[in-house]
Length: 162
Image (cartoon, rainbow, N blue to C red):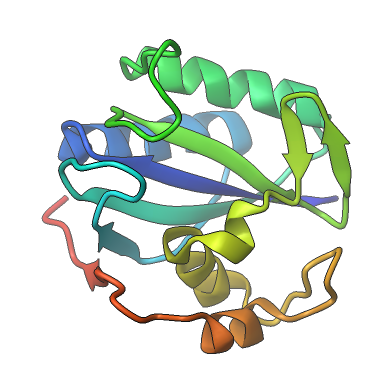
């Protein structure tokens, strides 16, 4: 059974939308493995800081079904699909890995290139799956995080009250 990894982020009412997304993901996929939650400065635009984490789940579902579920959870949490790529959002759910699948078709890119580009994806992924290897590069996520350029990085673990 493949393990999927979802990058979760919010910077609008994040104390509401992050727990709501975890509850909805658990309803759809069962038991989740969650990384710590990280507070991260907005990347690519000026805005409030994000809460980011990665959730892992096991599933037999096909990728399109998973993507549809994630999109519906975003919409249920007030996500505006008309917003720019780099903008404030109530909830962003991205399937970043699904087993060893390598797919680049239309809106589906697995593994997501954000893994290698953004600390807010790589650090929580390395926390819960550091021993695993990237299906394209073959590098372990813990190694990728250790080598990541952290110059000027404004990201830290938090312990939210919920």
